[in-house]
Length: 346
View (tube, one colour):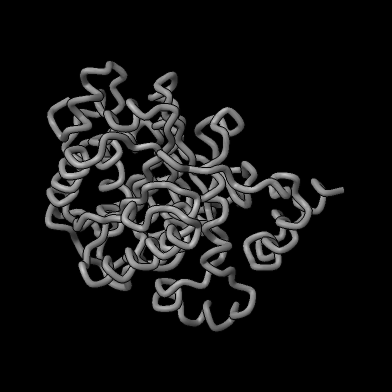
């Protein structure tokens, strides 16, 4: 009966993605059980997009579990405010508030990402969990310093590059994991490389965001396949419909309409925190998660899989945009991993 209720919520979309779905599943599904999250003392977590919304909620909860939380931010003022909240969460659980820290970087600028990875590798001895959470819907078409459409640059190419550059730290900390926060909006799009470089006349911020979120999930699966046996697990998840500052600004009508049905940031962060702390043997690698369960990657007829080699083509395109040899991006030998972890040629 529990599985049937879960399946009905999933098929209904609104029931599964909303606050109501979270309330029902958190009471009924055995994955939510009474067992507390395990301690993350001694573990290091790096998370992007942690100055507000889901990212800040996740970072605070992970710090409360004892993790050393580092995050990437563009603004020092916002970073300081977030660091204070994350440190307070750590202190309230009797953990060291000084374990929360950040580095400044702009994900839209790949040189900035490279500098950040080099800084992180020089100042941290391990990386147990890497969370790609940063996201934004751009109302008009913009381009990165490298000439890429901004959604694809900051939310697809930059996370790929950051993962590649920190593979050394992830390998040395294995079993480790990389978690990508996607969106249920990806269900409306198929994997289409041409859609990642739209003509200005065809640009829609919401569509560009959904296409990139679809591509994120495909890349997460590719990472899992290409790093099998490395001790690094890759997971993608979507948080449901969450009330965040970004959604309120980008989709004001949706936010007003859904109102009380939107999840809180803490509810949206729940599966992320669960993936970051659960025994890795229970999770495997390469799946797409929502409300602590693996979910199908495709739902609608109009957004079915593309050609059989679409994911491989995506990998090659993203690696090339990041300035990486596609064949070397997930190289398994430890020497290459150590070099990648220091931002050196792999």
